[in-house]
Length: 336
Ligand SMILES: [Zn+2]
Ligand SMILES: [Zn+2]
Image 1 (tube, helix red, strand yellow):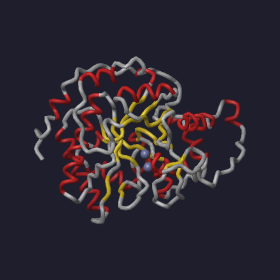
Image 2: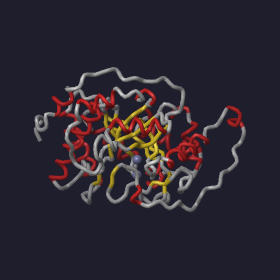
Image 3: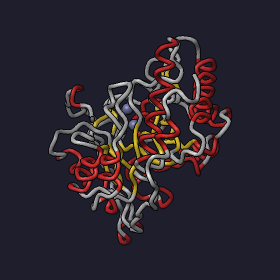
Image 4: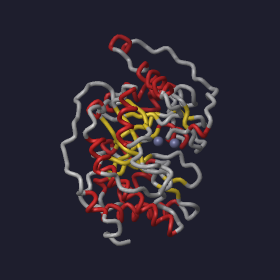
């Protein structure tokens, strides 16, 4: 495809830049995925209404390939929102249709175009990175699929030189033929693209658990992150998706559950909430919820309660029983 296809560069430069307001807060970066129903600025209001300090959002309807460009008014309503400074970290998630390893030429072309357009929308909203599921090889094999993802990312970046928004590859559960369920697969993509400096990584707790990484206790978590550092690189980590898993370790089935109600166990979340290196890493929920966001409030409360205070840091922790039975949540209620 040609560089001039969608007038992307022109669009990217249409909005005057402004230095992003960053609130230097010592508070832990915690929040949830927020709907953009009513406009992108509405996500900010939703997140602030439940005191998030971090937020993930889509940059357009997540089940559609394409959308009309954001208007200048929509962009300004987002960037100039009075509550924006309350959110220390705002990042985006790409739509679910995109598959950079798609074997169908039309789907693949759509994926390249949709990813390019979403990166531009994210850049217009001064969002630092767009979380992306690497792709599914659909039977052609892992290496072939990974190479196709690499060339697709190269193509997208080549047509968007100078764009500030990076891609954050998400670790996946490995459901079906989805790639990215091992740190080695993510590392393969990063080490083979032409512009690795434009790639970050988002770790999803439910996905790495379902993919088979041991998350039993603090020792296992330390080991898992040591492997992340060794294989992918410590500095690549941009965000953590905080989801419990309905499905078992190694099941490679991706089903998010409320924190403490799934099979991961609170020890893994306690480790993340207390580890100093994750203090400045945004941690966001992608768990099922209703319009009133009560579930987000409850999950954030559960996570905050795991933070050790100075006094109980030294004391040995009582073992918290794992809630074996998963709380029933309709699949249709999946986060939007
Ligand atoms: Zn996720
Ligand atoms: Zn998931």
